[in-house]
Amino acid sequence: MLEIENLSRGFNGRAVLREVSLRLSPGEYVAIVGESGVGKSTLLNLVAGLDRPDAGRLVLDGIDYARLDEDALTRLRRNKLGFVFQAFHVLPHLTVLQNVALPLWLRGVDGNEADVPAQQLLDAVGLGERAVSWPRELSGGEMQRVAIARALVHCPKLVLADEPTGNLDPANAARVLTLLAERIRQVNAIGILVTHSQTAAATADRILHLTPTGLRA
Ligand SMILES: Nc1ncnc2c1ncn2[C@@H]1O[C@H](COP(=O)(O)OP(=O)(O)OP(=O)(O)O)[C@@H](O)[C@H]1O
Image (cartoon, rainbow, N blue to C red; front, top):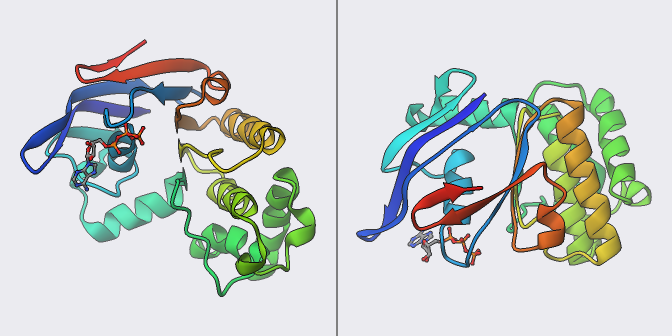
């Protein structure tokens, strides 16, 4: 269970999020839409533990992680979260397969053992034949698909995606969105997708609108 309770965040004295609340159970996948600048990415960054709220609680499986110290927060992110962000950090000195296997290595899975699920995810995003390529040899959209494979490989319980199909052609966008929704259901995860695309939002179970006064259906 993810509980977002009265979450507030402002920058330079200007309130962006005001007491935003949302409760999601395992298996729930929601899309958050809203005008540019309303605070969608700000909200996702808070839920991802990449930024801290000014006020409010973020509770995942009973733990208020808005208040954890950096080490504990890093462990929680590593074990339970999968992110697909606009600024995807594909590591240049690792091959495509190694990049995807990385979340498994960080959880102590042996190198060879990690290769199997990493290859499966690469196949699922249509990059099975690029496993030994280097990130510099990929296009922007291919790199984005590597980032998506990496975000899902360790079956995270909380999957967060910020405009995950921004650089993709319609066919690959559809493939990635299907994979995202399937994975979330398969592992009974909680999913939050932030997007401007109606088509992308429609792949989630429910659409929520973020407005200056909060989240509404
Ligand atoms: N680190 C920051 N420092 C100062 N202002 C910030 C910071 N992060 C976000 N903001 C401001 O907060 C507001 C909300 O930004 P955010 O990126 O969350 O909006 P968004 O709804 O995701 O927009 P878009 O749909 O255009 O991506 C914006 O006015 C932005 O300038």
